[in-house]
Length: 212
Length: 191
Image (cartoon, rainbow over all chains, first blue to last red; front, side, top):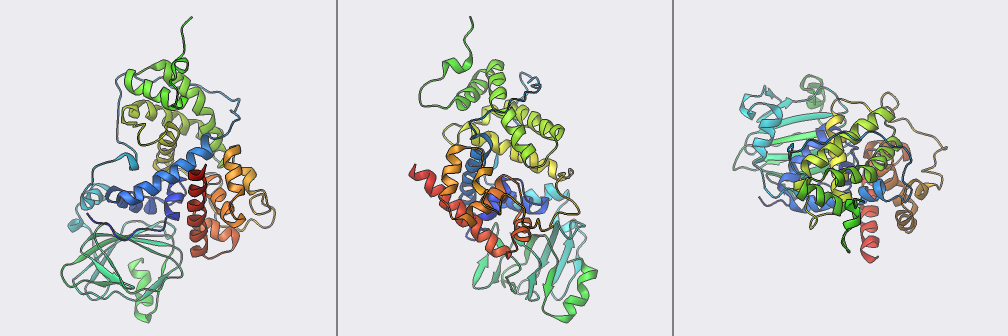
């Protein structure tokens, strides 16, 4: 898998400090599975975190009970940048969601576009989008940040193409209008921490019903 | 008298890495106890500095250290130091817990502007970093870059929280974190 679009490096600093919502964490975890370049960035962010955590010359006086390790009880999974294997992203999300994408309850959200909301809160929003080939999505901006990960197909946006495994990084300064490529349907998963801001009146009216 | 695992440390390898290798290769409980004594109080202290309660910090630390034991054979000293590897385990434990737990310094006032009385925004930026070496490096960064890195690492704040606190657009906050992060890596490499 050839990854060409990455989130800003500042995301991996926030990931490394545990400062993100579960939805942002999940999208970045999926991207890290397929992107060696971002695994390197995360490792550097972890190195800096280790310096903040362990670099002090003063050892805190407080001691507490050490849990007894069990001989023989061994490995679960490795940490992100320790992984070698590239995993299929569709399988990753099938496992996370607990069902295959085809079984989700999709809602029609305009010509060629269906959506499925996976979380309930505006501050930690996760949304699946499924668009037919050639679909032009409504022009919109954001209240806050949004990361979009491509699971299937591809789309164009602002002179860039986003393919499987790529992440588009948008915030309140971004006004964009994704266009799905003509070859295949496109399935994406988006995480955000605020509602979308649509340019069109119809989309703004439909927004509360769709929960986007 | 029995010698400790740390007495057998070869030159060129830091103590934590040597102890972790002893756990990985020999399942040495003695090495585990020494590693626990070295690292656990610092992990707990770091978490409490983030606003977690003493009990919560202790639970996360104990869970993370048990994971260190269970995953020790996955540790590769060619890929990272023991400190970085353990940090990543603690971080992943925090991410796992985040889905259900609420940090005590969050909630209704999550995005409240803190006003002027804040050590981070009044020149005390580098004091918040624990290591003398790290403080020295942070002092070489422009103040606005050091500020957002300390707010991220020491206070565990998100882009949105930092943007609200320093009254700047999200894009500016991300740019400062990225530039400061890259700048700090260059300084570390030059050392």
